[in-house]
Length: 212
Image (cartoon, rainbow, N blue to C red; front, side, top):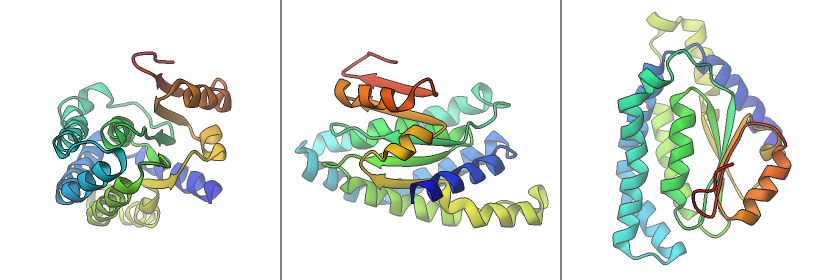
């Protein structure tokens, strides 16, 4: 399964590299709309698993959605012309599972990469609601054949399921072989990820503003 996820994710990213940033933004706008639909269910899951009060769960949703607002404002000027790296693995944290994961998810998608989300063992219920929203957004996202050509649009549609994928827990094969890994969390887990990654592109923030 990990091999297939990586393979399909890379194939999709190679197609995404040929799209303008405006198309990535269009998808993110659709995704944001779908997240708003399932926000209450997602917040209830976070409350149940993390023990946060409802008010903080709502704050977390708002913080996660702010990453979309930041992308809409800055992405086209900051990343236009840069090529996608390929597959980004986003490893969520227990304490702020949605808000922190969205930083990696939005950054990866805005720049044309595909995403594999590694859900935390103890706080992954929100992710099932998020993936429902992602699937609906992916189903709604269609390329204009007049702009990209019929063959390109058909090939993209065949692979767009790989735009956002997920599993629960860290899968070493994915962590080792993803083009980029994004993780915010404990130092112990961060050091294990660093060991798996070697010198590959990796964003790790451990126990506060301690970025590697």
